[in-house]
Image 1 (cartoon, each protein chain N blue to C red):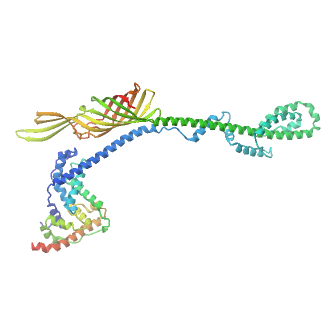
Image 2 (cartoon, each protein chain N blue to C red; image 1 turned 90 degrees about the vertical axis):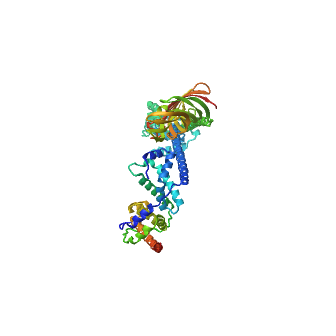
Image 3 (cartoon, each protein chain N blue to C red; image 1 turned 30 degrees about the vertical axis):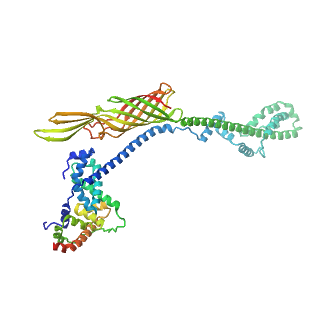
Length: 446
Length: 185
């Protein structure tokens, strides 16, 4: 201990003197902990990938599932009204007509009051319509109108109603004009004209009331038509919904299929499994499945070489283990949406979720000395999957053609989104995605 | 402690044999760190396993230009501090000091310290309050600065300095008490 050494230096050096020998028991605990952690991580990762695939499938499906028909009653009413509304009625007129009879009556009354033509608006009933018809005959009494009377009865009102009445009275008044002789009797019948004018006023009022009644009747017809169209739309909509519900109420269709899986650049391998399809309406279905396949990845050059021991005695001799992976065995869970193009043809779009079951390898051991292999022995094994990603997601695109009642031919394409090999594990570090095609014969069980 | 890059690569590939080898190599060193921060050997072993798991899971972030020993020490200490923060008793009295200037002289203790062994010194450190113990270990033994300690333990630099001084004072008191025993030896 030198004199310059501080309190801190001495404590530090003393504490570093402490030695601990390896504790095998603690390593076993650590190993358990590591295994548990990795298992948990694997489950987490698997769940993440699986649910990502599921989500991808749902996202692809969503626009199709969500294509519900518009059941907004207001929209139906608008459409119905648009369908009933006559072409020759402008919007303003139509809106007035569309008012209820009571509203219309009050509006008309107010309008008439404003024009100062009548002191009170008529109450319109069906009997008044009949009465109006009889009043039409009353116009003949106006034949005795004088020229003066004509001038008095000529309506120059600005409203359409006044113009209408004026036009209605025109033929009668023209007839009056032609009778020159009546002029002489003008003074004598002055009182009578006054009376006739009163009658004419009444007639005008009644004509107005008849118009109101006609408008109300038209409105009633429009409303009835709207109600009918609404009812019709509703019935149609209900029928559509019923149809969709019936389609959705259909049980899951279960099919079994066998076929071949061709990995691009690899070989053709068997592909088999079950498919579950649920119709959501007459054209659309959603589906999933449980399939098994294996991918031959000989072309990917997944070779792991491990030198287990090297002895140096007049040179060197290494004991080498070489694991060459041939096939990756997968369980596949597809999630897809299917569109029926016609009775025989359908297409589908979705995602494939791949889960690595196991790996088959060529396991060989040999001794190597300066590049020469000796005592080579090899066998086929399963396992050694550390170099591969345990999960994969692929985009799925498919076409189906119905051959017979329960048998169809399917052609699927898978485009893998992940690398099937783990990065950095193999010397050949290329990105290998699962781009494969499957041709299958499907038999519908129910 | 010498850890080859190949061994690290093998651990990255999750080779069990390599992991066991790494554990064996680093055990003594990591244990000496854990031993200073926790009160029992059993706790130290448990903490070591937690720290080792973190080392394995973060191995892909290791850069070969940094000595592996320093890297694993940092991970181990961070693990210990994290665990301490999790278990920290909230009603522990914490002194907040804005600025602290150390003036005391501890040179008189040096001859006694030199005659003590690691366990004796460690047992004295463990008698310190938990936070002071951690700050003392971080500053005196592991060489962290007050700034780093203040960040790690969520305190001011002044408080960190206060803890170091408080620990030294307490250790001085304890050492002075045992001097007669040493003199007899």
